[in-house]
Length: 412
Image 1 (tube, rainbow, N blue to C red):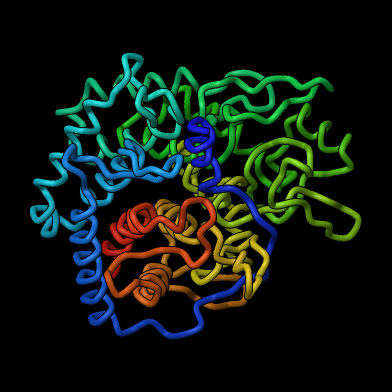
Image 2 (cartoon, rainbow, N blue to C red):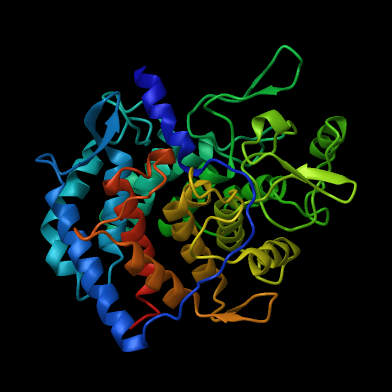
């Protein structure tokens, strides 16, 4: 049961059914009002977050019905506080210092960070987040820990087969099932964990000429619905065997497994061509990973993914998830989606973003207005769809605070 509790982290960026795109339905507040309210709300939320810190300096997650200290949660919150506007950081220096000391104390001998009492769970995922935190706080002071964590992620990047270049939540290499095909397990490479690994390596200063970046591009291409870039012969052949083909919408999906039963977003059929369905969070994760790897924004990979964004732009729902007024599938993973959306569009450097309907979106203001609209009275956030841990206000608020760090560079 304990292993299953930690493995549930793998659902943080899982897939869903495709929904029609939506855009902001109301005009954002005036710039001055929006900027003021965004800073005030960020500060109130950060103040609330500090009250949730335990005596050890960590923040806790729910696991097996208990609240346990979590290096992943702690790393996300450190990242959000460390990247706040400079004039806001001194307010949170003491709790952040305490949190960093706690996080550093959890480093494993192999340079990794992990969940659980032994630090053995979710090591790839957690190490990526720890690098985000340490790279944001002080690269020189924590150079030894950063080198160890970078080495761990590079070593555990898969080097063979369809998952070459990717990273999984756990440390187990993908195995082969009875039919000779890849069998899904916790170590399966996916865009979400690969994205966290790439984010951590980027934020901690891994050079662009490192072999990691070349390999990661290979993996991300195999998760993209673009026949121009997704050309791996073995993967394309496995799709064909299942009656599938590479799609043409440019979006990205969770993992390059040619089996509809293992793709939680399912498949979609356009004309006579059925392909794995693209969705929002993975598309934005792919975009920022491509940019971090050094691809220009006019590369075929980034251009195709941005075409999907221009057709599916939304700050109110998670594109790729079926609209359901009862189950609220369209809100599934919404706050993680807004986080990777903001970081990807910031990396691309396009504002306003012009969508294919001719509208120009000032995305930092539109995301900010949406977050202000959905904040709870206690100045924190929780998703109305509790799937993938987004019923936990500590996790969701850490997503929002980190998103706002990006937004506040644009919304003054």
